Length: 425
Image (cartoon, rainbow, N blue to C red):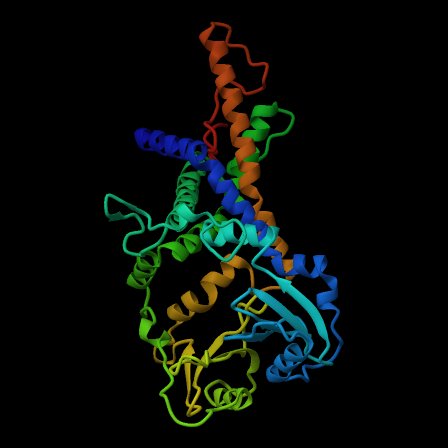
């Protein structure tokens, strides 16, 4: 047992030291992104100066406004979605977004979310700087993560940026697991001892106790972020393990495959496609977005998203919990998300809840401040862990010189850096 604890202590300490900076960068960038929609609303207030009232404008009418007001705006293959009181018309070719008030039809302005500080942060946290269209793209990180032909992403065919993100998630999970084992106190009054912060007993004990208490309180949130973050980069392994121990199975890839069957004539209009799609979703669903077919591709189709019931992505950039494909010629509608043929509790969790919990998109900005609070704990843990390690090393040097004094208030014992352990009295 003693050897096991010593090994876990070493893993916790040197995992923190070796890759701690990487972990902090990934976690803290995620903290900023939690409030990305609200930050944009504050920094670009004119884009959100919308009229009060219900949605009156159809997405096709918003597209017509953009064509009229911005004749050079490239709408080839555009998608249009309702976001905070406005229809947003996206240009896949340029990344530009035009916002049209969904109540009175005013053009509110344009923005490009693929450039700027927030785009760089998003590229860092979500893509590992490998999203080519976004600020901060680094070419060599976009290359396949392979060494001597071996795929480091274990069959997920990821790149170096994604591999680095996966490593940061695995490191966080290791710190969580070793932290909880090392935290678990011995003797009587276990929880009381493990959750006690001793003040007035010196800087060492104060930082040590803050480290173990804050670490213990934050462990559930950090574990969830670690597991869901790993799932983004290594889905074959994480989803395979998840479905191996729970009922249900993963949705087949085939549900995401759809092609229009080429026919004669101009096909269905956007408004007709919307009406057709409504037949495939629950009554009363709210239309969120429409993606137009690429007219030069005969098999292209409409893709629409609706919100009904609990939409776990309601407060994110792209809400909607029902996805529908519509044949551009016949108008035949096919709901593919959630998968009707495999709508189990576990499948629903993986499709609708895992990512939403990671990003906090299921609640408004005030509850999302909790995500920020827990997201900042690794910074405090890094500080307190480093302080206790430095002070313990200083104490060790004094003892080695034969003085053994205790001016730093650390007492006769000490814990290694990064250990949220209640091992000492």
